[in-house]
Structures are given as C-alpha cells and as structure tokens.
Image (tube, rainbow, N blue to C red; front, side, top):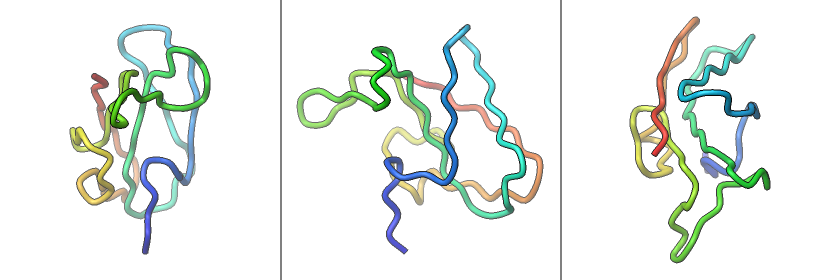
Length: 89
C-alpha cells in the first residue's frame, strides 16, 4: 500500500491556537493503525510552508516523536480510547 503521509489523510481537524497546549478529539475512529501529523499554520494558508530544500518553516510534529514524515515510524495501533501527546517544534 502506498501512503502519501502526511499529505493525504483519513481525517483532519483545524483549530485556532488558543494556548500552549491544545487538544483535538476524533470521535468514532475505526480500530486500526494511524500516523498523526500536526503543524501550526501561522499564515493560515492551509499548508505547512517550507523553505530551501523543503525544510519546514512552520512548527510541526508527528506521532511517536518522529521528526520526519515517515509513515512507518509514526504508526500507532488504535484499539479504542487513546490519548497521545505531540510536541511541535
């Protein structure tokens, strides 16, 4: 299976940043494997902006503490209620 992570996604959410800690809840998520990516869209253009050589210029983060958009490294097994934390840098 070819996965275009993080550019394609199963479910997404946009939230206005209101503090240093943000919470996003996905309801009725089917059991399975997921990789999660987040970024702070500072200029509100709907995408993660990059500079020279594709290096991000906006803050971002991935599940499992990954620093690269590698689907396998970011995979989580979801089998019910789950809380994860992602630090953006």
